[in-house]
Length: 331
Image (cartoon, rainbow, N blue to C red):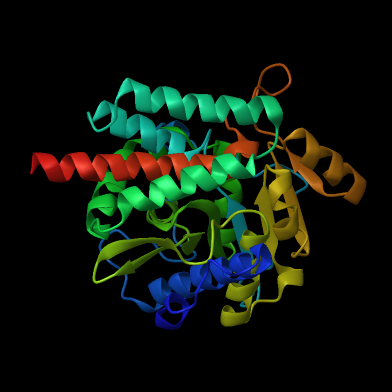
């Protein structure tokens, strides 16, 4: 990571920043694999923790019929799962913001601004570069100098309950299907790595690829390593991890709900579309990709906002930064 930190990012093109973000995510994921597992950490092939109401009721959801059946104990195969609205009902950073609000770290004004940003994306279906740039700079400025351990502790408190109640049972069954086959299973998300690791660990997954915020001596510097792990950056992370772990992407599977993840889905031999947005559903039909929709209700009402993934991460980071500031002042 030290080499990555020395690179000047401001002058880099979008593709270069995406590549750098992917390499950083893969490097962090591999480093976590090398580290000794801590208490409660589940490894590949282990049973997923009690992560849904169905599980607490003693019911284990079954993977849908017609899915790709993973070859048992294939050392060169793995599965990659997007998070928001693919595994998790809604967006991880939305739950982060709500959790911070309930703990008194955020005001109603903070939540209203976050909700408006999410609504704007839902109506327009595309990201505004100026909004993203402004939100990113604000978020990074707020977390600069704050301890990484503080953010990790806040995320642990919040997602202990969220992961238990907000997981799509059908997608959880798909995760378990790959784990039962002895495959490595990875969460791939634009959410901060600190959040991604908690969700992955609670589901018994091998690890997580998430947005990496640069840190030195246990504190955030106020910069990202590369950029958000979003769109092409996710594909770069999967490609980098496959190289490091000697995976054959033609034997791997990937799952996502968003057209933003078409680059990642196109990398693997077994792409799956889960709870798709309209653009991804159309692309999947044209490509002959398999579609799994676990939502109910007319038009499969969206509980997540796939088009808002990038800005949602930034809003969540801003919320976390505000929480860290307030927690520090109260100490």
